[in-house]
Length: 339
View 1 (cartoon, rainbow, N blue to C red):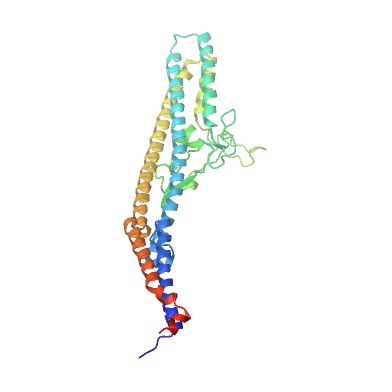
View 2: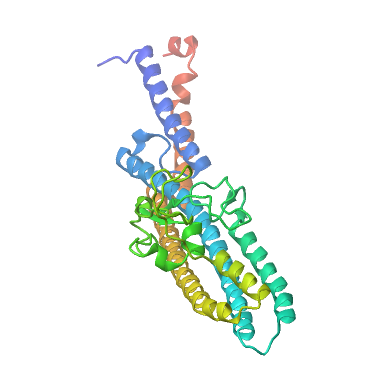
């Protein structure tokens, strides 16, 4: 008959107890976190997929922040364009009325004061800031884009944000695009027409200075620059025409006001289309976040009912193990002598 030593019996008891306690400890840890995976070795494949889903969710959080910031800029831009449209429309209404010979010089001088206020409002919109950055300064956002005479000091760069994976949108318009006539920008591709593949290097700035072809100290090469028509010059010309009681000059401004209004409406439409695209990207990102959360939950979250059922079973098993080993663990020397 094979004799079982005390050391072997004690080691067997300790192994059974330790194994039962380890299983119960693991179940209790899962019950505390309500996760089916507490360490990578529990399920390596599911753990890797869960980490990938977490990374994608974190990316989507940043995309949502970018989309919110882009919408804020686009909404402010669209509102500014709306205000500019109202200003130019008001100037056009005044021009239509003052182009008639019904009004005399005194009346037109009074109207000139009103037009000057429209000019000041336009300048305030042109230099509008969002936080610490100027809205219509291109990428040179810390510098005031327009001086008091309406000269543009910004650049022609566009800022873009990634609002979803590999989808970039421009979030600003430059002063050139908004305030200068479309004819001056003919042949230059507007970045808002293909806002997901725009290149800020496609727009070049054209000087507003008018110089003769004769070389001098200020123009050593004798270059001739084409004068540019813009909203500021239109309002300034309107004021001058009113002060000089020049009805013909006022009539000549009507077409320019129409062109400015058409350009502003076109820009508002394009900005609105970008905002709609950003909204669509946000909806897709939110749907992805829900799908990622559901998939991650199926991978790492524990079945609560099953988990606590296993804990109760394991506690009963541990109690049974203690009871079955009680006779072995509590034996003394006298128990062996009485055998």
